[in-house]
Image 1: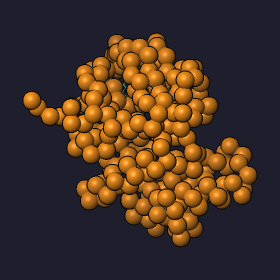
Image 2: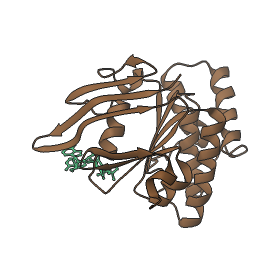
Image 3: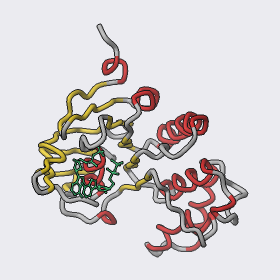
Image 4: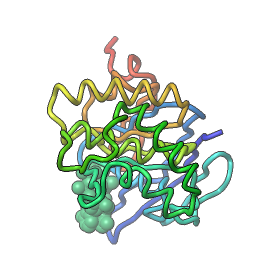
Amino acid sequence: MGNVSLCDAFKRYDDIVAVNEMTLEIEDGEFLCLVGPSGCGKSTTLEMISGLTLPSDGTISIAGDDVTDDPPKDRDIAMVFQNIALFPHMDVYDNISFGLRLRDFERAEIDRRVEQAATIVKLDGMLDRSPKELSGGQQQRVGIARAIVREPAVFLMDEPLANLDAKLRVHMRTEIQRLQKELDITTVYVTHDQEEAMTMADRIAIIDQGVIQQCAPPLECYTRP
Ligand code: ADP
Ligand code: ADP
């Protein structure tokens, strides 16, 4: 179970309302894209689900539990960002396993999960490489593997493909989509790219000035009558 609910989630920064009483139900296993212009509140919404930002008002629930005041580490989530920021002095294995080592997983369990994740993102055989020996797409896949090893109920992705060239971006769209369906992980994916949202999402939430204007499957969002 990994459904995510926002109930009247509200976030104010001084005199700016970033997210305005947003209510949204993301179903277990669903791939939901948040789209909208720069500054409309996409990242803030994701940050409230992750716990990196606390809402000024309203509640956030994951798998039916109110997590509004829980720190990120107590939420069953993993995040992938635009700037993947791998640790340059650690090899691929250490980068992927970092979160598990922090949480005191046993060595055998870490090995098992890292190998499984590396196979899923097609990085097997590269675990002893240094990040600087990898292409941009391979680095991005390390970032995704680092999220997968946590085996979270929810994936939060903020423009994970924005720094890649066009060809790789299209390739990685398919990869992420395949993984998401295979692992059945509820996913909230931020992009400003309508085409990306169209090809990846089960549902798209179009946001403007902190408010959801429409939330529907891709064809309903972008087909004119
Ligand atoms: P998006 O991700 O859609 O570009 P954001 O959620 O980053 O939008 O930002 C929404 C609004 O909140 C913007 O007006 C932005 O400038 C403002 N904002 C976001 N984070 C902060 C912050 N830490 N301090 C002040 N204002 C912020
Ligand atoms: P994105 O490109 O994902 O919308 P931004 O580049 O707008 O993200 O913001 C990156 C970070 O800076 C976020 O953590 C956001 O909360 C913060 N931020 C955004 N706008 C402001 C602002 N006006 N003042 C302070 N922090 C901000």
